[in-house]
Amino acid sequence: MGLIHTMHALEVLFAFASVIAGAVATLAGFGIGSILTPLLAWNTGTRMAVAVIAIPHFAATLVRFWIVRRSVDRGVLLQFGLASAVGGLIGATLHAQLHSAALSLVFGSLLVFAGFMGMTGLTRKMRFDGKGAWIAGVASGGFGGLVGNQGGIRSAALMGFNLSKESLIATATAIGVIVDLVRLPVYFASQFYLLVSSWRWMLIGCIGVLLGTWIGMRFLRGISENVFRPLLGAFILALGIYMLFPHVDL
Image (cartoon, rainbow, N blue to C red; front, side, top):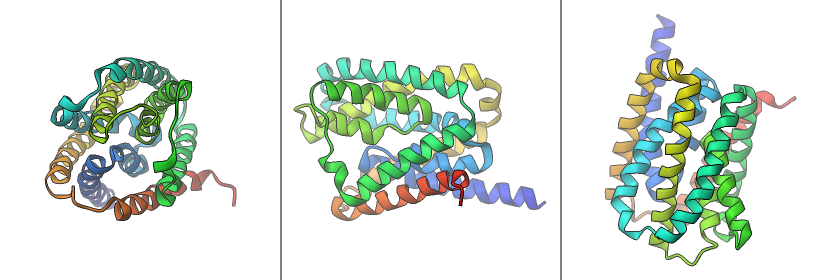
């Protein structure tokens, strides 16, 4: 009975977090994987959590893409999206070969980096130009395939192009869809039965992030970035430290 109550409590917490993650991603352009993967990893391990969260991540990103599709820069999408797709395929292939402990270290390190950059405001100053932007494109896709954490690096890389704010957000969202389309078949090929058995987590996650996306689009656009981004950065930093903590020799 205790295990059943624990599972129900975790499902309720996961559902609530999914709504928050969907709303956060609408405002920041990333956050679904960063928030939900550590939470689900309590129950499934990091390797499985990355693959499961890819489903609600794809659902929410696809919906956001449909809403902002008219602002996508097709030239950047074609070139940068290809680089990200290559990286995503490489990352997803490596994901299938690594154990949860190794993925937890990578994922936790990325969260600590992204959280620190966001909390201190350095994210807005980070940008890549020229070849660095294309390398960052491959890297963002690679991390997306490996541990599902890609949005911050991708957005920073796209700042190296002459895009308006609306076009940058829309193009980044479209590239996120491409990376998801590349990595999902690899996840299913390597963990099919485990993913099918996790259908409840996928369903809860999808409903939650879609509701959160709607809330973000409808109600949260007016929140000041000067308040929102440091708080989000601090939260992601805390999640990253949690992911690393079991591997730190105290």
